[in-house]
Length: 111
Image (cartoon, rainbow, N blue to C red; front, side):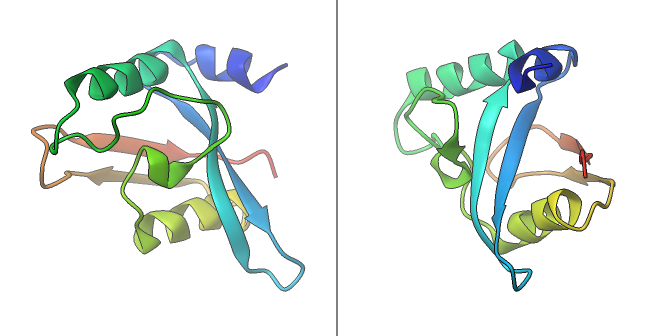
């Protein structure tokens, strides 16, 4: 099954993330590979808002570096690394300071 097809099986906003790993266990680029329609539509909506309050003024392009759509954050990178590389299933809630909503995230891995 293609990654896009897999993400489309999930109704809430969903994206597939990849983590570049090195032989020493460290990581490099973290990319948003694809997402379901809810995720892609959210990037379009943010791009249309524009202005200084937008995280990104860019519509989604597959396999983009995550920081083009989410502010660069070492805690987020560690969270993604622990799931993608270490194989941990993770679950959390985040309330971004600048937005009036809660992000409920569940990270699973195919490893």
